[in-house]
Length: 272
Length: 166
Image 1 (cartoon, rainbow over the protein chains, first blue to last red):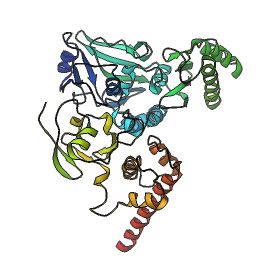
Image 2: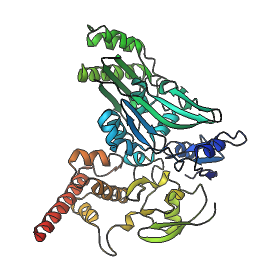
Image 3: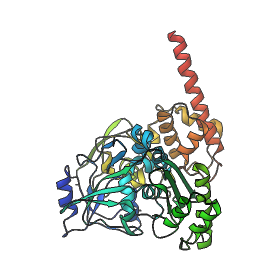
Image 4: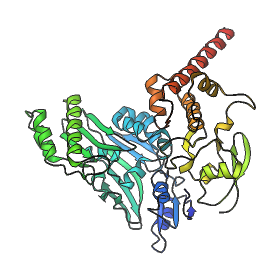
């Protein structure tokens, strides 16, 4: 399998990158780790004329903590997220999700921001970051805007990026946060993912991925849990009513509903 | 973009074939005749094409050759000295961790990277690190045993070296 021809550009500044990405005359794609983009190109699903390699763009490799806020630059790889002391101190579950993603080679090359921009419904980080109401900063010709991770995709593999470059992923990790992340992996990507979070300020926040078009918060389950008197079965019943997973090679609608229900049970058992 | 790429492969400076869309595995196999990295899934799933760039594992099937510019690439041919196996290769033979052999170069390369990063890995760490290398013959247990052999020998050698210093 070979790649179609393309031109490779290596901007050094955000301004140069945005000028290349936002050039409507040419079909371009942001290229970071290439773990998703080159895959699509090999499979014939994408053939951009220009790959804009933004790994060398100044300011995208940062990873930092300011109080409860964690910020991860667009060029930070999964392996770097896994290893970062700041992440392991403030939000260790994100480090462990990064460290279990795909395989060690994908983690070496792939970036957290790239994973989110790819908008795969089976993304591990998207489920966890949707649950914690994380957001991304995007820069384009008209400046910088902030978009919630939950709103970054219109649908599967369809991010809302409009000639824009992701600058960083931001998450606020509240005091007293407890997190359980559960997933079932049959092949390369997880089939269903469940993230359950609880903290005194927000109460329960529960997101499910892989069992619908995109990872999303399930407010009905959160409401049940937030009554404080719910049984596990009540939460699972509320979840099943909200999921309409499509049947595919991973299994039937009913099978995926069952997986989600079991994973929710495991997650809640860990942190209740 | 047709300029040859200056890079280091298995310790030697060389030029990889140019062209933005050339994949590292094709540059290595077709450009340099290094046939250790294997083409199998070609989708970064199976690990047969694993090479190291600056001592970190990459799928050479999903890496542009240009990513290696100015960096050090190591393929399975780069381990051990001329005519002599590396300790990982030797342990693979002893443990019977090879059957058809197609996945072996990728495994050996990944194990070198694993032990470089984690000199004293427990079994869970080994399993997690190697989970992305697929073998259809061995059932994996012999690979795990091979890694533990190398780990124990290296730790014993380091301990013996310390004893000598003392």
